Image 1 (cartoon, helix red, strand yellow):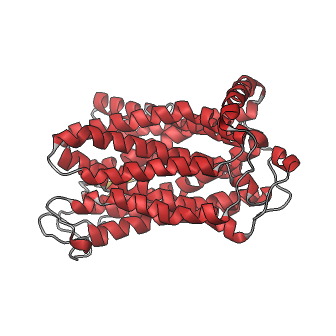
Image 2 (cartoon, one colour):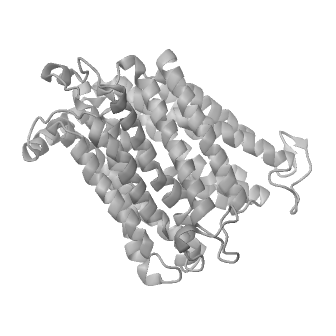
Image 3 (cartoon, one colour):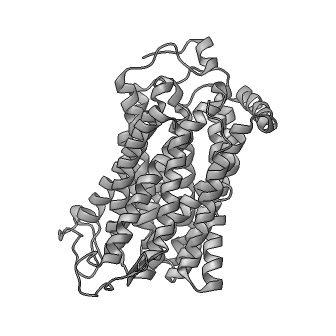
Amino acid sequence: MTTIAPDARMAGVPRTYPPRAAVVSWIFFDWAAQPYFTLITTFVFAPYFATSIAPNPAAGQSLWGFAMAAAGLAIALMSPLLGAIADASGRRKPWIAGFGALLVAASCTLWIGKPGDPSIIPPLLTAVALASVGAEFATLFNNAMMPTLVPPERIGRLSGTGWATGYVGGIVSLIIVLGFLAANPQTGRTLLGLTPLFGLDPVSHQGDRIVGPLTGLWFILFVTPLFLFTPDYPAKRPVREALRAGLSELGQSIRSLPQQRSLAAFLLANMIYTDGLVSLFAFGGIYAAGTFGWHTIQIGTFGIMLAIAGAFGAWFGGKLDDRLGPKRVIAGSMLVLLLSVAAILLVDKDSVLFIQVAPPQADAPLFSSAAERAYLVLGCLIGAAGGPLQAASRTLLIRLAPRDRIAQYFGLFALTGKVTSFIGPLLIGTITAVTASQKAGMAVLVVFFVAGLGLLMRVKET
C-alpha cells in the first residue's frame, strides 16, 4: 500500500497515490452505507413503523420524526469535535469501523419490530437513532479520506462516482427487498408476484423487518474492501492527546472562519440549500399523493426512477466537476432545482403549465395521464440535479478547507447540513396548514434555492 510522507501528509496531498483497487474500494463505501437510507429511513421500514407498529400513522410519523431529529441534533453537535479529534490522531479507519459497528448492531435490532406491539416502540426508535448516528459519522470519516486517493484534478469525478454508486446500491437493495423478500399480507406475494424467500411470513411483516439485518450484513460485506485495500492516514497522536489537540484546533478553526470568507459563505450556503433539497425529497411523494392520489406502488416506482436519475446525474456531474469546477456544478444544479420546483407548482391533475389536460383515471395504467408524466419528468430532473449538487459540495469543501484539518471541516460541513434541517419541513407544514394549499407550502422551497445560490456567488473557488 502507498504510504504518505510526513511533510506531504501535513499538506494533505500524498506524493504518490494508491492503486485503482484502493480507489474502487473507497467508492464502495457509498454502496455499503446507502441501504440504511433507502430501506430503513425512506421506502420500507419507516412506512412500516408508521402504519403497523405505531398506534396510528399520524403518531408513527410524529414519533419517527422525533427520533430522527434527536439523531440529527447529536450528529450536528458532535461532528466538528469528532472530525477535529480524527485530524489530530491521524487515522480514519478506526472511526469508520467503530461507527460502522454501531450502524450494523442498531440496524439488526430492527428485526424485533413486530406489528401491533407498542412496548417495542422505545427500543426501536433508539435503534433507528443510533443507526443514523453510525451511518452519518462513518460517512464523515470516509469523506475525509478523499484527498489522499486521487490527484486534485480528479476529486470531482471520484466524488460523483461514489455518490452515483451509492444510488445504484440503494436501487439494487430496494429491488431485492420489494421483489423477493417483502410481501403483501393479503396476497402473500412480493411485487414480482413471488413467494418471499427464506419462508418470511407476510402476516408478521418479516419481509419489512428483515431490512434491518439485511442493511447490517450488506454494510459488512461491501465495506470490507475499504479496510483491506484503501490506505489510511498514518497515526499522529494517541487518542487522549488527540482529544486535547483536537479541541484546541477546533476552537482555532471556528475563530478563523470570519477571515475565511469563501469557506464561511459556502458553509452557510450549504446549510440553506441542503435544507431545501432534503425538504424537497421528503415532501415530493406527499405532494404527488395529494395531487394525483398516488399510493405505494406509484410512489415507490417514482422513487426508484428518481434514484436512477440521481445516479446518472452524480456520475456525469463528477466529470463536469473536474472540467468546470464544483462551484459551477453546484450553481447549475440549483438552477435546475429552482426551475423544476417552479414548474411543479404549475402542474395539477388537470393542467400542465396552464394547459388543460385530462385528469388521471382510477383504472388507468401507471402514469398514463399527461400531468403525471410531466410530474415524473420534473421529478427525474430533480433527482438528476440533487446527485451532483451533493457530490460537488463535498468536492468544493475539499478545495476550500485546510488540508491538515479536512475531517474537522467535514464535521463543520455535517453541522451545517443538519443543524437547521427542521426549518424546511416546519415552514412547509406551517404554510400548508395556514393556507390549506400544498402548492403554497412547496413554494417556500424556491426561497431556499434562491438564497443558497446567492450565497454561493460569494464563494471564491480555490
